[in-house]
Image (cartoon, rainbow, N blue to C red; front, side, top):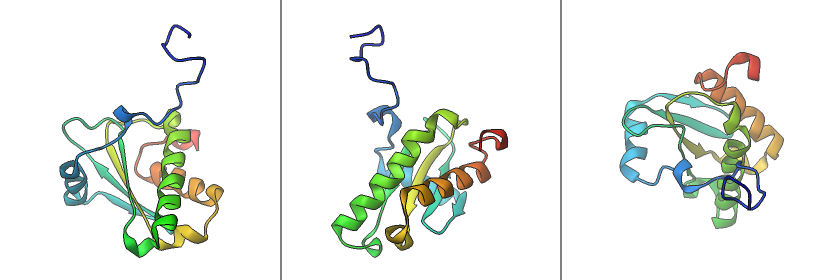
Length: 128
């Protein structure tokens, strides 16, 4: 075990403090109306109390059956997890999967995630 308390793992995990768990906070993001639409996802921002680059991932039944919805959520969580270190800001993020995500590769989804985060001001242009 190292000084961080983890067993040699890097601190690039998707842990509970990085998640939005409250349905109220997700509804607040929708109500604020700050969204960026892509082919595979809709990127909503939530500003306000307790906002700190946390994330919620949503996929409705429009995306497909349970297997497709779970894959969509996994792809979006992984995009956030791997790119969190280059993101700045104090907004929470709600990612809503769109049906087209089923036909996309991880690289395509990640590229779109970075583009939408850049448009939202969470990634500086020099980091893209």
